[in-house]
Length: 470
Image 1 (cartoon, rainbow, N blue to C red):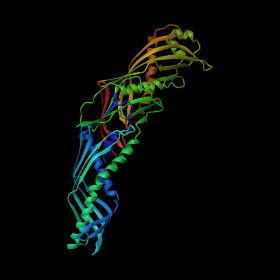
Image 2 (image 1 turned 90 degrees about the horizontal axis):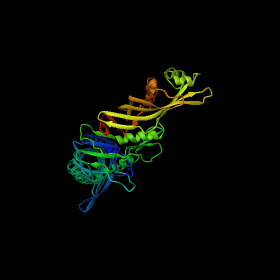
Image 3 (image 1 turned 30 degrees about the vertical axis):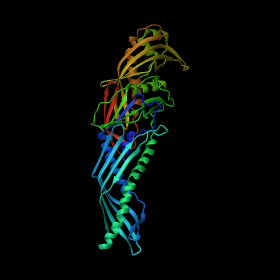
Image 4 (image 1 turned 90 degrees about the vertical axis):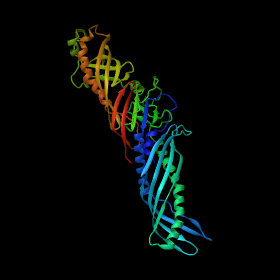
């Protein structure tokens, strides 16, 4: 019934490394649960008003004989939930209490005794209905987390039946013998119906894809790392939160550090991505060869680079290559880029190399020199279309000469032109990839509304409300 809450709670598969520190923490606050309750009750109301209920038939004792009854074409025309509450039971699960609910039902009826028989249409008004249900999130024998109805109790108070065209003794007689099966059906079927609904939700949640492709190079694992932790003001879910090279699920060479989310209740949902999460992303893309780029004459957007340009700056290049040739640059990261999350700061440190080649007339290449590069960049983040998007801004560049086939030269002579190439070619290329976005946990039919990003020591926090579309 409370499908939105369940969608937030259960992202399906558990990893084998239970109780390891998570890469992603999800917190559902009381505000989120209240919204889940409102959405869930509205869905329940809509479903009840459009459902068709099975006929009721049977016997009731009447003096020396029986009253045979049949109730058919049962249709709920109105449902009201004036009082409902949802709360957390620490260490147990979720408690839902529906108080003083009422239902209006239209139905056909038929009664027969050995003395007389009659039939007609009636309107039934049931009031003072109370339902108490407790849901838990146990593990099944396959290692999945599921949602289960662990206890349920329904009581109904007043039943008022209006029979069309009946009055006096017969009216009271018929009403007396119709109330009993209606009351019995309500009490005995309410909890099984809730359980059936929960089972359908459970099946739906098991189909959620927790291993999500980011692009052709990487996938992210959002499976649960341990059982949901239920506290009085919120529910915490520890998710594995690891990015893998596509199709390669070997664990990264890092250990996730523990971290805690501050107790904030102004948003429905908090998503806290640890530094470990982003570092596994860096490792995955480094392993997949994403931190390599080739800049050649046909791909350079702003100007054609040639040995003539380099030779005008570095005499050694001019002496080595008298004939002007196009130049090709191969840049690659030589170490896994290091991600750092500090207060209000998301930075990446990249160490790499740039090899400069002359492209000869027969398309063969001749290495001129190789430089070491150390770069520091800031990443600005935003959320769009359920994705976390980034944009690089270069803070600092350092160059050093690693090897030269044209003789030694002062690298400072090239810093301006190389910085320009990086700013105009490499950074835009990286930002084009970052703009495609990083998929956030896929919550069924749930979209984030008014998300806010905060960067603190060791993790990035997204605080957001949600909207559920039924």
